[in-house]
Every structure is written in structure tokens, then in C-alpha cells.
Image (cartoon, rainbow, N blue to C red; front, side, top):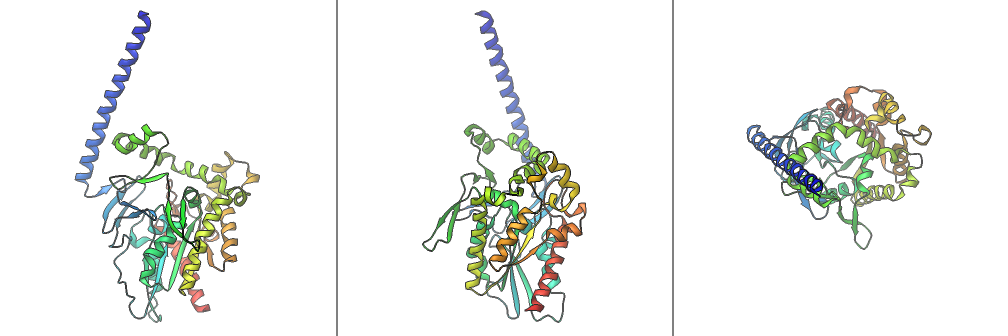
Length: 380
């Protein structure tokens, strides 16, 4: 009896010491966060720039500025009065201006690079380099990190159309099929998406987009503990690449369209509704397909995938093949960047861990889109 009591006291003492240690580290983490935020002039390693949106889950804060830093890059982020990572544009379209909406996710937002180095900003410069051009080209950026095709459709409808675009260019990143799988849609009588909700995401009180944890206690800690969020963020950086690859594996299966039929259909329906919306208004629609980093280089594909899969069941071009087939069936003009990125492969096209384009990746994409559009306009 005395031995059990002694063990119980030792257990309580250990729990007490762990609790005190946690409080101490939590206090240090809060002091570190406070000092860092006060002394680095808006240089943060988080993005407290999200606000809740009843129709699209979240939106970007308008008139926002910060410097973002990660272990691999630094970038300045500025949003305009509409919450776009862009300058302010007049609502009424100036005479002799051809307006293009850049629609997409973090690749179009320009994750990892400054605004002037995004594909759409480089493209705008290329289009305006011809002094004899009939138009002056103006590109308006609607890209938002974490936005998938249904959210992009509603953002275009809610914000983009008021700028009277002549064309919409949408970057399709197939990995976002994973995100769209948890989206819940509300539709109107014609069956058009009007509202999107997602029980797995929420906007915290400090403006961060966060995932809800099934464990209520852990979810509470994630919402209130600076220490836990610091540890999680560092682990995510270290494990990011392999986590994304493993989660993408199903979409690279040769039976992907059958196994994940509901997910693919959600993606198709979102794009189809975008096409119908633009057709009704006589707006040109052009799509380009964005490759994952491991698709571009066989040096990455082989060691990363052979250890976790049966090669005979997977193929690295499956998502592009499925999207190309669908887009052609809908009479949507499409450019697949995968062959181009493979032909011009360099390790510097993507960040080593973060699977986004570097400045070099954006430049290559912009050049190829420019060449494609130039031929398209000549053809027209």
C-alpha cells in the first residue's frame, strides 16, 4: 500500500514538473513572439491576414502589409482595398485597355516571391513590351493561397467580374483536389455554387487560417499556445515535402478518376461553372496546368516514390492527363506546363522543401504563357 502511494506521489510530482516546465517554455515562447513582433517591423513567420467569409470560408484582409519570412525565402505582401495582392485598379476599364484576371491559388498569389516576380506581373510586362500593340494590357491578380477551384469561381464572381475583364487566365494546381474534398456546397435553383463551408478549417482571432483538430484538448492548445504552434510550424517545415507527396499519392494512381470520383467531379464542376459564367459574358477563358515539383524531375520522382508505392500502379502524368481530357471536352483552351518544365528542368525552379515556384519558376511559366497567348491572339 505504501509502495503504491509512493509511486502515485512520484507520478503526481512528475506531472507537476512537466506542467511547470510547459508553463515556463510557454512564457518564453510568448516573450520571444512579442519581442520579435515589436522589433522586426512586420517581419513574421505567420500570415495573420485572413478574415472569415461566409461564402468562401476565408478572405484576405484589405489594405494589408507585412514581410513574411520562412527558412527558404522572404517576401513582401501588400493587399489593396479589395483584398487582392495587387495595386488598386479603377473599376471602370480605361479606353484601349485589355484586362486579364489572373485566377488561382498560392502559385498565382505568388507564394515565396515578391509581387514583381510573379508569373502574372512578368506576363503583364511582356505583353506591354510591344510598343505597336493594339492594347495596353492590365492584369489583375485574384490569386489566394489555399483557394481551390470552387473558391476561385466565387471570388471571380464576387470580385473579379466588376473589373470588366476581357480574359480570365486560371492556373490549375492539381494538388488542391485534396482540399476541395472537404468542402460543403450550397447551390441555388439552377444548381450553381453559391456558398462553400469546410468543417476542417477556421480563422483564428488573430487572423490565421488553421485546421481544426479532432482532439478537443489539442485543438484548444493549438488555439492558445504559442509554444505548441511554434513546435508544429517547425515540424511542418521539416516534414512538408514528404507529407504532401504521401497525401498526393492517391491522385497519381492509374485508377485515380474512379477511386476519387467525387473529388474529381467537384473539381470539374467548379471549372465548368467558371466556363459557363464567362461564356455568358463573352469573356475569353484560358487555363494552364501547374506541375508538382516531383513531376518535373525524375531525380526526385524515383527515390521519393519507389519507397512507398508500387510503380506499376502509379504514373507521374495522371492528373494532367485527366484534366487535359476534361478541359478539351469543355472546349477550354489549355496549356500544360509539365512538358515545358521538364524540358527546361533546373533544381532552382522550385524551393528545395516548399513545393512552390521560385523567381525562376515564375519567369519560365510567364514566358511560356506569353508565347502561347501571342500565338493565340495572332490566330484570332
